[in-house]
Length: 230
Image 1 (cartoon, one colour):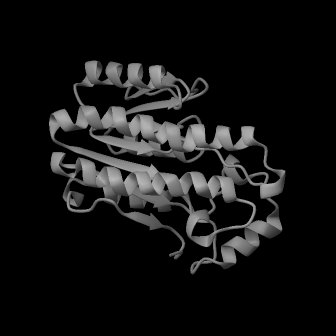
Image 2 (tube, rainbow, N blue to C red):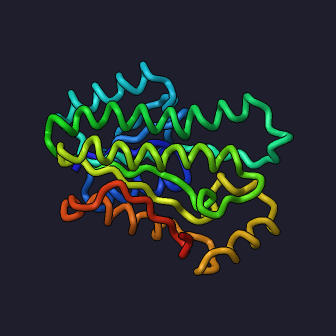
């Protein structure tokens, strides 16, 4: 299996890279910075996922090297937590460039490769901040709501090519994404979940595993949240 994962320098992306190499995948990762992870089954690209030229070149390189891409895990993302009245336009632009434009570019370019092989599994990343409509996370949640809509529509557009597109909405996980969030706010958020605890990396890989299984070819256009949020 050839699996392309975005945002692999740390956090969930780094974990998923190591996890899928551990189960026999050839993993291609990318991030804005260099990676210190070394493995004969891992190839790293340094790029910004919102840079169209660089994304196109990376996907071309991967196709030339491996001839196919079986799985795309659109993990790269940034969070911005602030009150609407205190949010500069530049912050909105930065969040949407990575979370929406980046997801779109990878989805578009990788699906072109998948279509030629009449097979593919794509998993995008949303967040439980969307259904919970959390105060202070309007821009972040709006960007991920856009990802969810893109997921559902692209799933329909790619279904006839045996390419599925689904999304996962993690609950808070102890990564850099939430390190600056007030502890009291995090505790209130956890209490809104049916399962009152932080998410774990294993919770994420378990759901990604389900979506990318060959046997999951009849499942597409779905957004599944962790923690019992609906």
